[in-house]
Picture 1 (cartoon, rainbow, N blue to C red):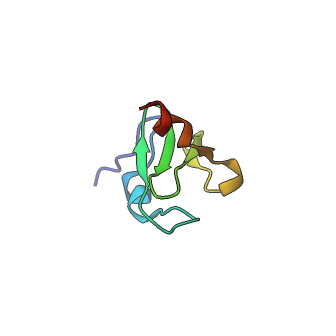
Picture 2: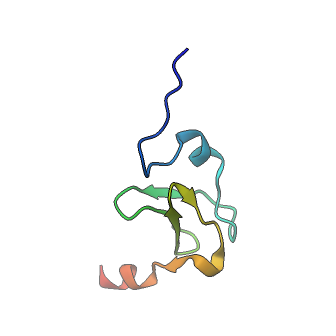
Length: 70
């Protein structure tokens, strides 16, 4: 039996399947480059630090600025 672990800084795919936005309870998109979990509904990006998603609204970054630039 081979135990495949995610690469350093990566998120376990099984964890991504069960995580939802704590504000909207909606799905999250993993942004590997920015190391964030993005809630399109809430327009928030939750940081991932040392492979651990920080699922606190107070720690999330607003993505409204990015939408306005497009």
